[in-house]
Length: 278
Ligand code: ADP
Ligand code: MG
Image (cartoon, rainbow, N blue to C red):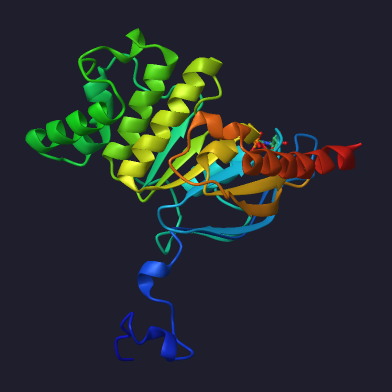
């Protein structure tokens, strides 16, 4: 087949989508069952399908136990779906890989290493020369506002600072997608607001695709381009909503009409699910 340029593309039908338009993440009919201790199985995820386009900030929101963490673990390749497939950059996920950067709620830094050593960990393992590593570490340490802390030990840092390091470490590896599981869930509310703004700024600069998990509706709307609302029993996607709020996002937007309307809509979807459980 001859090449299709952007200019003539729309006049030719049917035509395969250009390669760069493929979604960065594709979750295709993914189910996950856990075996129960007494026998039988528990369906944690049932036929979950969705796409995340390149450079999009996607947020999964849903009640505790609806399978958000499970879905992130599957995408990270730390567990395997019972049925279905997950593709990152068109490649099927078949195990963990440096193309997916993870930031979890619980701090996953090496406490006995310095900030610099934590951030360069993956780069060193890949055999990157020291001078290039230093350049990348300096860049991301600066990005997350930790100039002057590169030689501090991780164990000396506050929770918010540790999460800054975790974000810098994930981005330093230049992943295709950043997977974040309630990364600010353990922080006090003031630090959490600061970290949300920091993440928005860093994301704006890095242009990474993000899959972010939260059970906080405000956080979902403030950060996301799109919110994927999940339901429980069994875990599934109930609805996908575009966030109609311009960027840059600032905290005062939580009082805007469009923000409140969307909050009410998501609350309704989550509430339906709670009612159904009784
Ligand atoms: P969420 O992150 O949305 O709170 P999880 O993905 O952690 O949800 O869990 C989804 C469901 O699967 C929950 O009901 C949880 O109890 C169950 N579950 C999670 N991990 C396991 C496991 N290793 N074995 C059995 N059940 C599990
Ligand atoms: Mg979870």
